[in-house]
Image: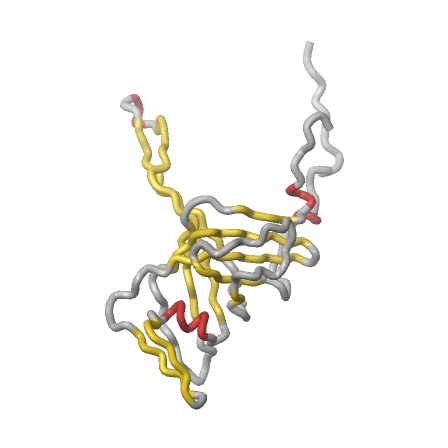
Length: 198
């Protein structure tokens, strides 16, 4: 006995409310010392132990999940039998548009900092820049929907050029490698956990 095939007459599985466009005014990157206490609230309150980098470039925030995969082929026909992820790395990239001590310090290895009579002297090391591991909070907003990434340990990598030009704004692009686990908080209804037995 054949089972009748039900023909779909309406795409009820499509929901435009789940399509996200970020870039709200509260999109933010916050930076704290490595080991800084993260906000404990399940909310998107202003963090007490982290400093905001200010304006971000129009390129926004980019999150990457880089997996290196090794392929194992079988003898018969040379077909793929298995694949194995050999290394895995999460990173995020942002570009700060404001020149502040925070953003300037992400580019330069400042060893000493004094201010006298309104003039600041920043002593920059000429040696290889030391590792700069910090804690990070990243906020993304789409209307009233928000996502907050609480990243206890992340490290900036290769430094970009610092352009001083009369035809473009000076920007500070950063790629942060995430170490270990991290939490994501959100009020997105699409992320609500199913209640057992409900």
